[in-house]
Image (cartoon, rainbow, N blue to C red; front, top):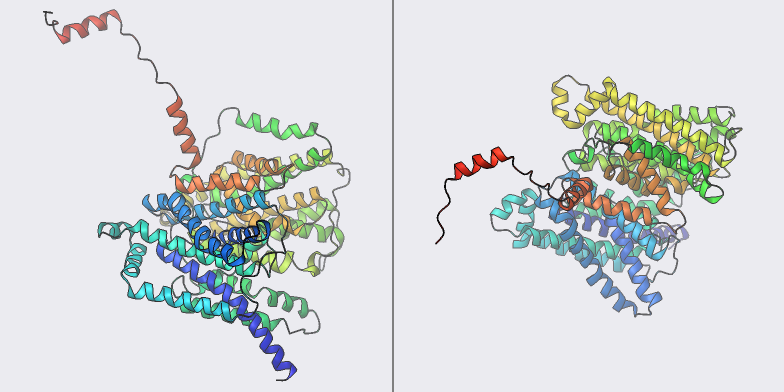
Length: 627
């Protein structure tokens, strides 16, 4: 065998190894979806938790590898799936199985597990994960073949498979026919979590093991399940293996000229390309409303809430040192979250890619201020920020255009894919971000002066959102959110309104991202990764998607809870609230209101007047004589 053939063979083996792990993810996602109807965004987080558990058993506690693997894969992973099904997803299914509510619950579980892992194991990457299977792909391929064949036989040839299909088609009708829908869903979640855990322990030795990187890597290979229409196991396996081999083979190509960095980026992220194609080009997966009605309902602000918020945002002006430097992030993040108020709260559209627009705003501001933006000269920082907003706003069409024909889980997947694509092909590429710094406007170099400037910009953003919401376009957006079909019948231009919402949201996110970059004095790609987009979306939804005050509170919580800690507290808290939003039809606000109502003492009945007492005695008649 010659050198070229040997290289081809070695790369094919490496690609088959990656493809086998992707195939396991596809099998788990499809089984979970077919058993429960849930597009499980938490699949990657479950994989990460299981990888950490195996590492802890082997490295920290000294267990034998195969004993630790058996406990992790046969007890911990299925047990986690059963707990999630019983406590989080079964109540939503019993309440009607709203796809939007289950989607919100899965995002909440993802955020909760990521935040909990950061609290327990820290945010640093680990490189000592134990190797469960050798690097050659044959063992992994054998596991994929056995699992795929077993699942296919169970679905097609057994009574359980018939019950599974019945539950997916109509859960309530299946229950009336005597099918135990809860048992079917529990089995689907247990198996899906088992495949997630197996994927995590197989990938952990070859990639960085940290609470953010591994879940995102697993979520990128959702493309194989989407390409299979969340139904065909053979198609998912073949797509996974083909993309894995093609990605490994592309690493040998080094064309000269400007195309080399782009080809290298594609070769290293071919699963992201497949995700973009599957999410944006193929027909959408899942149906249902964009968000639960309770999530986008207008929550009235309590009296004096704006005064309290104003005092809290002015309070950091009295801080100094590290506390003031941390507080600088709050107004900038509030502007980013206001973009979700426009897109999600007012327009009712799911957008999991706002972190991409915030990062583009920071990147374009830095490039313009440094004179590195193609075709444009160096401009001062204030003008660079304004020009960056103008340049990023039209890019909102990247997520606005798919929104015209997609809703619910399909739109969530499309916007998430855009966020992942921008992160991988722009933020993570050295040709775009190497040696890039970002200064502050002249006269606002100090933290206190810059905080004052941020408050002014935040005030302008609040006025812009208020004008949009109260104007004709805002009323049309609210009508589209509440009843899209009715808005179409009334002559509202729904497609143009969706594009308007995403373009305005991209502009606000770019403004907040540029402010955040100036506050940090650098462009940090980690500050705008797709996991942040999921966290920001969950925070805005659970605290009032159509409430500007909720966006301000969310920004303060996200920054304040992680200040002075190792990180993860904010994600854990927001994850718990998001899970509650998926579990209870009225969301956390309704739960708190009901609890307060139960604790409130019953009002005392007023004493009757003498005239009322005499009338009551006459109506009752004479009392019987006592013996």
